Length: 454
Image (cartoon, rainbow, N blue to C red; front, side):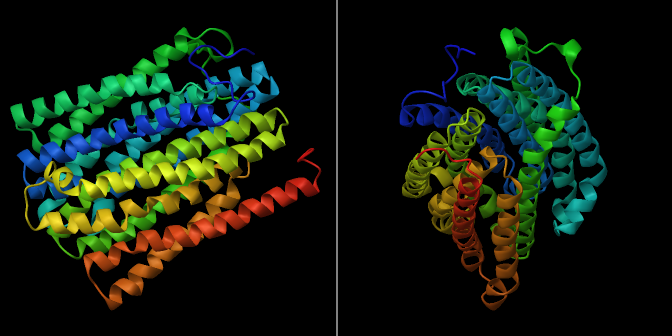
């Protein structure tokens, strides 16, 4: 199976330029997805006020909680298709591609319905203030109307990335990102729709990006061609996707659950802390996308080469991503901290909000490089189809450490700056555990004579 001009040959040739060529468009795509949210926050903060800003921010982790479960499943699609490609199993690629797109429609429909039914319940659970409840629920419900296109985009991207095509999803997001900004200005500044306006802008932009990727897959020739008439869920492909993707999705969802616990603690500190969190988390997500680029590169490269039986190349991929990922993430974090004053000013003019946002950027954004180590070890193990182990470690390490900190460290010193220390502490604990788990997985593979000549 020959790679096309927009694909990356992961099975042959030098690795560093190919890993970077894969990772940077993935990171940039994540940056642009975050720009959807950043545009929402900037427009609502500048033109609708701090109350509306807090209402949008109250939804951040609630949206992530359910979305991340299914986005994690899309990672299983990436691994399954990449592994089939590495093996030369053309029919397996075809079945898994159509199963992935069909599954995205099912997942999106489930989330759409859940969002409408659970809007009030979830906001009551995290203690959203009464004065913000109506606006927060409105944003939540409109956003969840767009779950089907969001899922469709993520699964279609997973299909393309499984063969090394990371550039076309980026191009699509550039176009839809511009559309999102223009619609934000129209709906919020022009039509004065406030919270509803930013949600509608995001919804319409997601529809555009998902349809564009589906059309690209329909125009593909060969084994990646998508035929809408052949959309169905193949049991074998579904099993492979779920075995890898479901633990990753559960990991992401419980990760979001721990953030909801932190959000509840932030809510207890008042609207100023809530607004500061809304502003600062934009920079954290930008930084996390740098991690995501190299983590997904590691997963996909390992998966293809594992399918081809090249264990030596798999291990080299992991070593290189462990060097490149944290370095790139640290550079992004330092960049945002160095320019924190003008960047925060883009989102709010509130003098009380700004210093708290600076504190969070220092304690969380600048230490994301530690999380990069955790995610790259996790991604490598998923590439080997060992998804349960990193999921369990993250649940115990990241989530456990954060919940424990809220109920101990934060209780002892209930300040915003002290609460935010939960992030770097949990990342450090989990990175060490993931590294040990990876070494044990490698030892197990060698013991089963899976590792070949070294």
